[in-house]
Amino acid sequence: MRLSGCITALATPFTHTGEVDLEAWERLIVAQLDAGIQGLVVAGSTGEAAALRQNEFDAIMRSAITLVAGRVPILAGTGRLATASTIEQTQHAAALGADAALVVVPPYVRPTQAGMVAHFRAVADDGGLPVVLYNVPGRTGSDLLPASAVELVGHERIVGIKEACAGTERIQAWLAMRTPSFAVLSGDDASACDALCAGADAVVSVAANVAPDALRRLCDLALSGATQQARRWDTRLRPLYEFLSLESNPIPLKALLASLGIGHGLRLPLTNLSPEHCARIASLQDQLLTLAHSARGEERAVKERAVKERAVKERAVETRAVELGSNNARRSIV
Image (cartoon, rainbow, N blue to C red; front, side, top):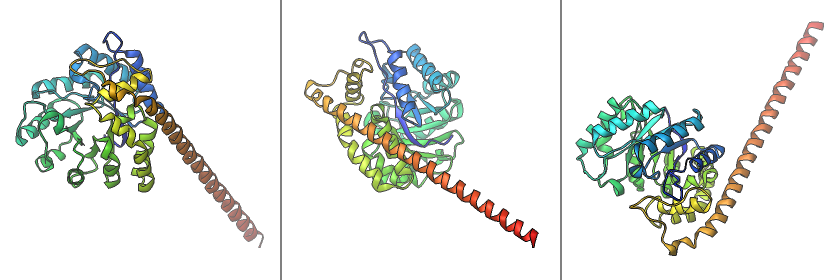
């Protein structure tokens, strides 16, 4: 498995009564697929995995697998506090049909570097799925250092790292360990463009829940080497990034999704977005529409240009074939 491009860390929509809203969940996934998103994370931290019951995890996973039907990889958030329970959840996700497991550094327990390495190796050995390591010190209280993880890179079932530390030095350290079978994924929207332009393979994006077309366009440009154009898209997305960081993820995201008709609120201990921030939502809605329109327009133009270039090449081949045929005919007459 090789992960690349824009991967959305999906939010989990709830109803007014606090139950998982499968209808809204499916609309969210369809919108992602329509925008060309290249992977989906189900039940990660953005999806409020810690607040989901096991039967709810199963329901959203089955729904996603059915809707996606193999078009893009589905990464299941299976990380738990203990190694044994992480292995069990990873095996369970494998049985449901997930393509890979996104496994966070065990939160709260604060293992040593050796403990983290042993944890990930055990999950990769026994979990039954390709594993993407996930380092997010701000949430877990522990920091998986690249120097410690060197020995994990060669494991046949460890296929990448999602790094949420925004520093350039950290991404560069992971990029030095990148191989054809070990991808480097940015886990921070605000620094993702820099990471991609530096050589990272993908971003696992929160912002793509509400701006999938724009994030896909940014990724396409950055990965194709069009750095200046990618940075222009990054600049246009800055107001969204800033809004999504006003309070703990996914609080601002869930407020924005609710304004777009997808879901209603969060589960405790997370609470709704503070009133003083809600006034920014209306202007963001307008910006999202503009971003989507611009991204789709650029994508159409790229496809139309490719069609024209292909037609020119085909005509050139046909012309050359006719010329060769004519030359051969003249030689025969002579």
